[in-house]
Image 1 (cartoon, rainbow, N blue to C red):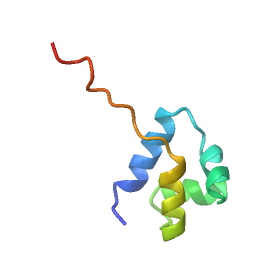
Image 2 (cartoon, one colour):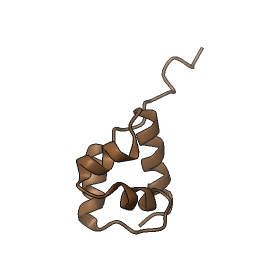
Image 3 (tube, rainbow, N blue to C red):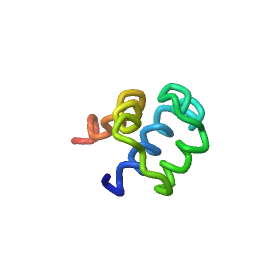
Image 4 (cartoon, rainbow, N blue to C red):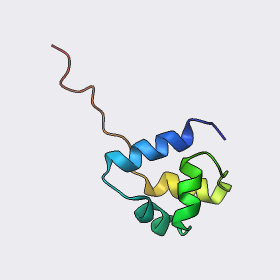
Length: 68
């Protein structure tokens, strides 16, 4: 597992205005486990990785409109 993946998940969750509980519920894991995954304290299973990738929205593309 990449060490940046949990940070990316946290950023994606926050950018979407979602709580840890929201993602944990959708992925079928406990909020405490998801919180530990975001902090890098627990390694998610392959299934959990797939579910988190499925339910976490992508970060918005902020580069559009900045070129002048």
